[in-house]
Image 1 (cartoon, one colour):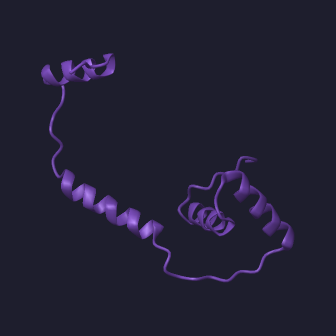
Image 2 (cartoon, rainbow, N blue to C red; image 1 turned 45 degrees about the horizontal axis):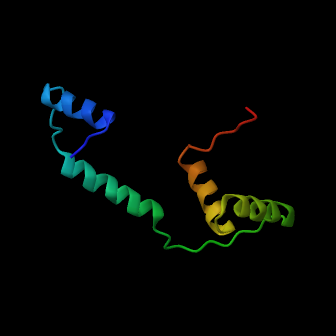
Length: 90
């Protein structure tokens, strides 16, 4: 089996003992899997009113992003409440 340069570097690093086992990986993985499932689960319906202008802008942006506009709106709301929505103007 031929290895590319990156693979050779990784193999050499492992053989030199530069890697170590991480404890509790299964528990951490299960926790993150739970977070991911809770994040993408859409089990509640919400009706909101917004201006037609804002809705059209959401729809246009959604087309640019290649996803349904409801998904874009949900994503924006999720990012806002999780503190990951960044104001570029400020």
